[in-house]
Image: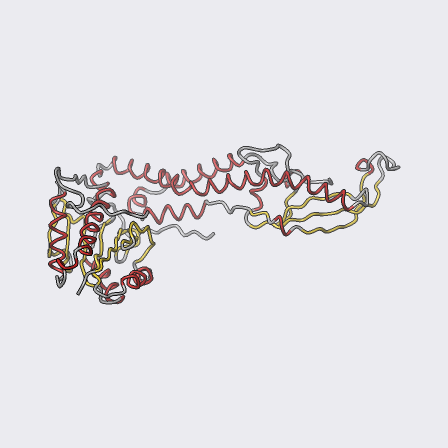
Length: 414
C-alpha cells in the first residue's frame, strides 16, 4: 500500500454512533426551540416528514462491480522499498503507482466513520476517499499483476466487512428517524397542552356501550393488512377542539365496513334502496355503540347538509357522506362537499360510496387514481380492506388543519 492522508481514510474518523447522537441532539434542539404557537398549530405529519427528510442520511453505495484501475509514476522515498532493493536512505526513486478506484453513490463522508459494531479495526481502512470514489494505491515493486491483484482483493475484503455493517447502521437509523422525531414532537406538544390546560383536545374518550356487538351478529370480516421545506403555519393562536381518538375512529369505520359487507351479502334485502335508507341502517348500528356522543342523520353543519354525524357536546367529531357512485367527477365533488362542512383541526371523516355498476374492480381503480387529483389531497395512508382506503387531506385554505378521510365502497344491486 502507498501513502494516505489519514483524515480521508475510510472507517478512521470516529464512530457512526456519535454521528447519530449529534443529529438527534440537533433535531431535539430544533423542536424545543420552535415557538409554542408553531408547535400547537403546525400539521404534525408534515412537520415530522420535513425533519425526517432533512436529517435522513444519504446512504453511501459502493459500486464494487464498477471498479477500474489506473496508474501514474512518482518519486518514492527509499524507506518504502523492500530490503531486496539496493537504495540509499534519503533518496527517492521513480516507481509506478497502481490505483484501484471504486465509484461511490451517496454521501461519501459517511464512509469516514467506523461502524457501530466494527468487524475489524483496520479492515478496508487503507482505502481513502477521493471525490465520489474510494481509492487504494499500490507501488509496483514486483511487476507481477497477479500479486498486485491479490493485494487489492485482500484489502477490498476488509472494505466489504465493515461497509455492510456501516451501511446497515445508517439504514436502521434512517428507518427509526420518523418515529423518534414523532416522539420528540409529541412530548413537546403534550407539555404545552398540559401547561395550557388543553388536554381535552387530545382525544374524545368515547366508550363502547356494554352488550353491543361489533358486527351486529354478522360474521367478522378478515382484513389484509435534499430539499426540505419547513411547514408554514397560517393560523395563529391554538384553540382547543375535541377530537376523536384513533382507536374509536377505526372502530366506527370497522362498524361501517361490517354493515356495508352485509349489504353485499344480502343483495335481495337492500335491492332498490336509496341513500337515505342505507344511511339509516348504518346509523341504526352506530348510535347504540357509544356512550358519549350520538349519531344523527340529515343534520346541518356550516354550509351544507351531511349524512352522518357523531357529536361530542356541541362539536361534531366524525362526519360521513353516503353517495351512489356517479363517476369520478361526482366522487371528487362529494369529497369537496364534505370538506366544505368542516372547520376544525384533526377531523375524522369518511365517504361511503354505493356502487351499482357491474365492474366493481374498475371503480376501485378509479378511486385510487382520482383521489390523488383532489387539490386537498396530502397522502395515502393504508388499505385495511380491498374496498377501504385511508387518506390524509387538508381542510380548505390551511394545510396545517388535517383531515383523516376514509373512503369505503360497497357493491349493491340495482
